[in-house]
Image (cartoon, rainbow, N blue to C red; front, top):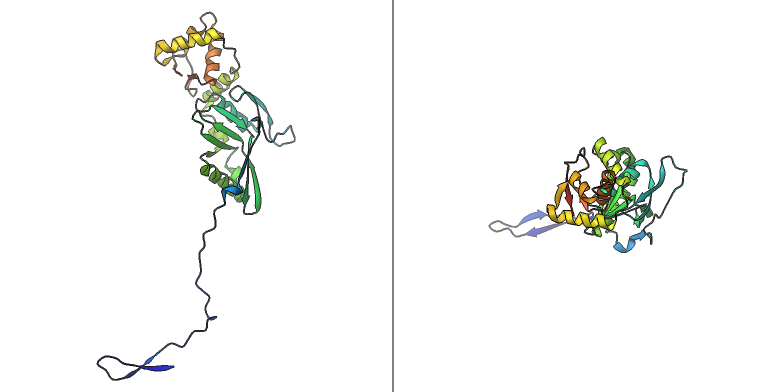
Length: 261
């Protein structure tokens, strides 16, 4: 088709026009639609009513499994693998851990392939109430499966949405050194030492005199003057109870500084 147009200053000229384009000749422009974010209603977090484990194993696995008596948790904690057990032992004496649970929290949510279920290895509760979900792995090869990494990423997203923290801990990150492992294991083994009322009274009296700072030896002598071995066990039990804070990554001496709470 041709039409005539008027051009200023010129005589009538013929201007070409494009023929109409059939509607099916070209596809419609692409539309980019953001994938809808999973609704919180699609997520279910299940906790054992008594703080115990939702799943337990008694043999039949390729790795070690068993139970750990925890003074801090006030119950037996189930573990699957030595790495998980070591992490629980360290948490027992960590001042930043007020309570803990093992195999006690399950996440149920809708993933790309339908319903997904994830059971947390450890749940830590800080003194301020902050919850940290911990997944413990032997090494980075345990995360080689892309689908499993995606599942953990979704669990982290759920934790972020609910004000919780999520961490993946590898076995080589649990202990800072052989000294650290030895000290933590020794202190945790003294968690159930009997602390009598007179010991607590002497502890509070020593706190008032020292302004919150003292040495390991002075604290032991103040708590139980007549029995040094028993006195040290009480100090170690008070560390589990978060009344005493000591740097366990270094060798311990009578002159080692401790913080009293």
